[in-house]
Length: 324
Ligand code: BTN
Image (cartoon, rainbow, N blue to C red; front, side, top):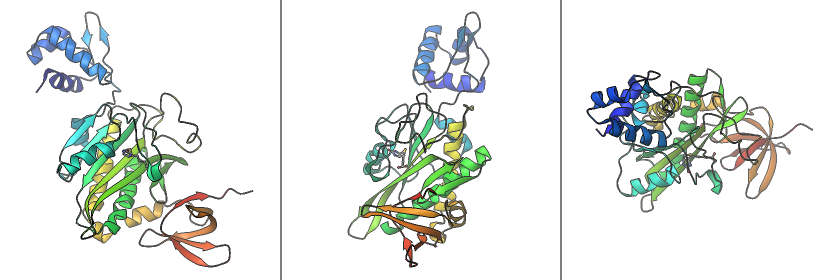
């Protein structure tokens, strides 16, 4: 183990306690200069490490840096193989795509403290500021027809909603298809991308990308999402982001292992927003008003149009119709 990794472990085990540079050196078997260099490098990674003269260094108590060890501590599945933690990356989906093309196994995870070109659905960008969110992508190699890949998205939405609810104690909702809402604000989005084997129409691999706004960003949300975006917690909580990421992944794998049985469906269905409300169905061909009556077993929306006819919506976006 490198000095920096050993120091990280020592700090985590003594969170909030000061340790002198000399004692750290003795414990890690290195010079004080090496300790100082490792501290500097951890600070550059975002660790809050205050230093007090004659007392030494300590890791701040409410430290919430994402680490592999912390994620593993809260996982209850063996399915996660490699965990790649980045300080910064363009997009975890793009990074994982490269690993997938090079043969990475199912269960490879890429997670980052920020994204410089985070991607959302329909070609949009995903606001991914540093140190306040979870931006992660999980590699899956399911033996399913590519048309079933949508179940990965919907089961992930159920998993994310459950994990958020578990850790906040606040009921979470799903805006069809896969946006998670908490306190009426979007806190999580999901982008699933699949590579298809054209010959047999099966998924070669699927990249499940999940973005969660965990804490308020240091500069407000951009104007385009200011009125809809929210965050899971208002205050930083020690180790919370690693824990939340691990809980989402753990819930997801429970559903993924039984994808053909649709065990996610009850959880998904009960969280769907706006059932019994007037909505707009937005698609490239235009916006159509309708009344949302429910959801079918394939996660399609059951709607009634203004002329009294009924239909099932399987693609597009929906929005709530504001009362005049
Ligand atoms: C959406 O709400 O439009 C979907 C957003 C998905 C964002 C996540 S963050 C991790 C992964 N990497 C990306 O570039 N996008 C997804």
